[in-house]
Amino acid sequence: MKTRHVNTLVIGTGAAGLCAALRLHREGVRDLLVVTEGLSMGTSINTGSDKQTYYKLNLCGAEPDSPVALAGTYAVNGAVHGDIALVESALSARGFLHLCDLGVPFPHDALGQYTGYKTDHDPARRATSCGPYTSKEMCLALIRALKETSVKIEEKRLAASLLEVDGRAAGAVLWNSDEKAFETVTAENTVFAVGGPGGLYAASVYPPCHTGAIGLAMRTGAKCRNLPESQFGLASTKFRWNVSGTYMQVLPRFISTAVDGSDEKEFLREHFDDAELNLRVFLKGYQWPYDVRKTPDGSSVIDELVFAENSRGRRVFLDFRSNPTGLDLGRISEEARTYLERSGACGGTPIERLRKMNPGAIELYAAHGIDIAKEMLEIAVCAQHNNVGLAGNIWYESENIPHFFPIGEVNGSHGVTRPGGSALNAGQAGAFRAAEYIARRYQEETLDRAKAEQAAEREIVRLEKLVSGTRDAREDLRILRERMSRCAGFQRRKPEVAQALADAEEQLRKIEEQGFANSSPVLALTTAQLACSSCVYLSAILFQIESGVGSRGSAAVFDEKGEKIPEDEKFRRFVLTSCREGNRTTHAFEPCREIPRNDGWFETVWADFREGRIFTEK
Image (cartoon, rainbow, N blue to C red; front, side, top):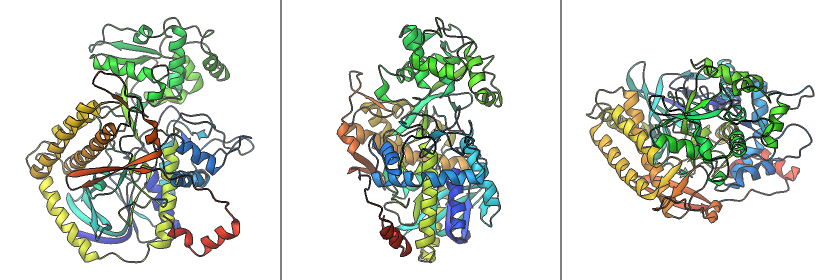
């Protein structure tokens, strides 16, 4: 068995992991290794939207803003710890300007102001973008900067198991796809930047190359936060991409057809008059995620109607080639008309308006073989973002596993809803915080390497059995994903979730007992950790339903009569925590911590910083 030891192991090379590696190096951590399936893989470098949003502190104009005000926006929708919200707010400007310095082309005006626009759940025009590939531009800039350092990055390495000894993190067992063998990296610290559970749903907008690895941490017993609060929204299916922003604001036709493409109809017209229909479609642009508060009288009813068409066996498309029947741009809502007029796009067809407002949105699909000027774009309601994940403290260290730092989308810092683009800020903030803490507190050697290597040997015995068994990993993965989309998507019913959990636990038990045959080790290992994570997610969803939380965020919960169960808003004052212990998952509600309020007296803060006392707070 190949075994190495480093001070800090970074797993994952999305925008958060890359930033963590760069900041660790700049903070003086030199005994550092970054492992990844590939620099070109993962969500950050392969996803976006019409103009992918980065949410930050306002840096333009006369509108007042502050870290506390921004933290209030993060926390106002509930199930968010105020101290973590303030950390992400306080680090916002630093993380954003760091990216600007690295060459990410965020736009500013002639006076140097980084302008902004309003995104979903945003009261203050804090959003910005450098185009549809904002997170990709971030990754490319961070990769360029890392290549100028001595940081070692090893590709074709899949995290297969996380090591834990004496109640603390101890590194990982990796699958080396080049050598087709397991190898061990023991580590004083592990930065876990593996993104959201992209492989968990059949209807998903995550890029196919990204599956996530949160199940590895769940298996070790890492504490999780707010697992039922995933985010769903409309996305194209042939090429996975959010159809938000200008894709909606140009007012395309919504068409449904039979499976063979026949029987076209503008099905939304059956539910609204022309003015109401066009307003809801327009608002869907910056109210893109499904939100139960925007039903039945808001824009999210469109998601429900699209899903209903799909449930009847019909396909749904956006058609940009011609205007919706009855569209009169002189009679649309004032909000929509003003937006289109100011954008110089108040005439023509949807594709002409899109070409005027955002030509890159057309080019994006063209680059993937889809000409939306000539063909319709198939869509569905898809899993899009993990508002939830592992529980970290204000330094992004796991709340119950020391020396383990989940950052980026795998860290559950968001609550019920979040401003669009805040995840990119959260990933950068977490990277800065974890790097600073490790550099100041965790550079000394405290790990018992012998115990860590023994733990690795035991894990490799288990993993070898897993990749040399009898089951069909591809079939198990298909069943798992379809179950999650059917029972744990944006529409949920207690009996279905309970049965899904029982089925998922039985599936996981058989996978661990029987292993996989005739499957690549990568597929086998990925399927196994997703099977574990599906059990934990389903258990948390069932617990939340049984607790009486009701419908909220991006999930509608229905009773036995098919009626939406209203939300009990008292639960917004709590964070739901979950922890896997053996083959059982436990849950508890913890009160949300308030946003810290202090006078920021300079002399006191300076003294605490000089003496390192700030690093004793968690």
